[in-house]
Amino acid sequence: MFRTILVTASLLVPGLTHAQSGPAGERVEVNGMQMYYEVSGEGDPLIVLHGAYMNIPSMGAIIPKLAESHKVYALELQGHGRTTDIDRPITYPNLADDVAAFMDKVGIGKADIFGYSMGAAAGLQLAIRHPEKVDKLAAASVSYDAEGWQPEFKAFIPQMTVDMFVGMPFAEDHRKLSADPDGFPALVEKLIALEHEQMAWEEDVKALKTPVLIITGDADVTTLEHSVAMFRLLGGGVMGDMGKPLPASRLAVMPATSHTAIIGQPDLLHAFIEPFLKDETPTGMFE
Image (cartoon, rainbow, N blue to C red):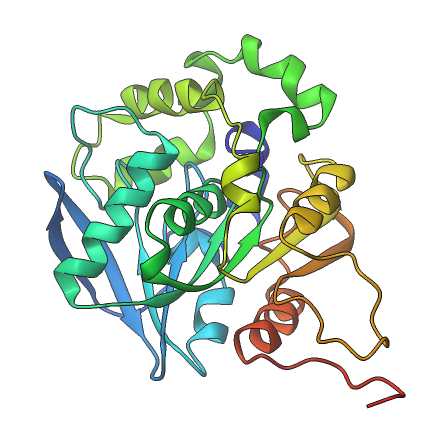
């Protein structure tokens, strides 16, 4: 769940910049901010949550693919894209509460959630804090404990500074979209602070009743062992073909895939997410 420098690469991939065209956006007041969102497609509601330093267009082609069979509500979170910032830290519980408040404002009682990186952790906290609002959660590059990050990333966090980010290409992207073009350094400060947020959600994850699809790259910022441990907390990792239904949660590992390469593979992402949301499972020999 690399929410800072690794995200820069995904924003440099052709086709993932803010120049993409898309549905007309709307704004709604949420917890003191003006939250920007776009609606596309028809069907059951599906809320899409982006990663840190990202926005709706930088999520790329996965949004229109999901909109082929769902009514997609793509959100821009606090201080990101066209959503205004407020005098409040960016934390996962805060982001989760913002999504819950958004759902109340636009009249969504319950929805599926797809989140990537920071958005995946926000989606996990939404399922923990507001389980009545989440049908299923597809979480790409998610951790439930900071100890699950790769050692290289844990060692890098204390070295992060605002100056590392103000010259990055996505800083200009922020200036073009944001209602506060000069507010990027303040956003960086909040996102660096987010990297230091204590994450120890094991008991909360174990208690979840919400089905979760964990999507990870085999070279992600989260270790494979951590993703497997999370899957087991959710009841996964058991043997099939023994006459019992498979667990509701699932684990998908994307091969030859780093953290920033996840969102750039919309076809593979969609092939994992869509059957999960539709409760489709492969048929075994004994069925």
